[in-house]
Image 1: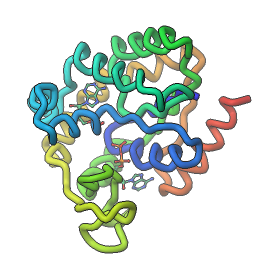
Image 2: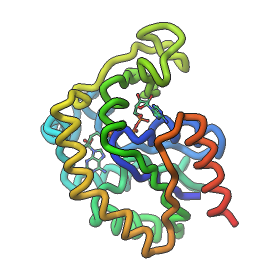
Image 3: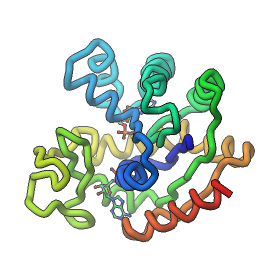
Image 4: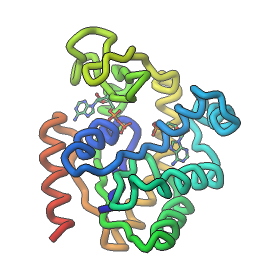
Length: 217
Ligand code: ADP
Ligand code: AMP
């Protein structure tokens, strides 16, 4: 099953993808995580991406598409994948269709997690991420058992530079201009299922699983 989690920054895509990964036994592929891993290893791609990430802009389509294509070609994606943060532009969405067609596969559904902007700012300003396994936490909504330490792997938690309020505002603007049009694109393709993402983490998980079951019918 190939699924896309679509939604604004802070909607809970990463949080829900981690849960779905365990439930559905499919790899979670987050383009933002792939860029951050590249940056940690100081690759050319990572250093290029940083310029855009720091401003809250999108990394250019050509490099983003090439990076995701490479990741999808790994054998663990043979039976499906949960894409998080990709596609973010129409060009990326069209490339994803092509990539999957080349693999003899197709997209099964797009889960759009809808959350109002004011809530996103609250979520991102309290977000802490594990340096090692990327699990997201929140100081209020999803705190780790021990402050600063990842429950899942014991890694160190940190706050992302681009979660600062001024960068969050830029990211939301970019989302509304460049990514929100995908809602209509996938609705027209008959692939979109909208889920209310404003409830607590558990409520959103239940709604997503229900939506996925409806796609499987
Ligand atoms: P995204 O991957 O869409 O950018 P995350 O999954 O990283 O978003 O979630 C953003 C922040 O909001 C994190 O700190 C996370 O713990 C928190 N969060 C996620 N889902 C919810 C929810 N339903 N209610 C409250 N906080 C949430
Ligand atoms: P995320 O972790 O999904 O919030 O992404 C963090 C940053 O990485 C974004 O603000 C972009 O700069 C970059 N990025 C992640 N995914 C993409 C994508 N599909 N297209 C372009 N840029 C991306």
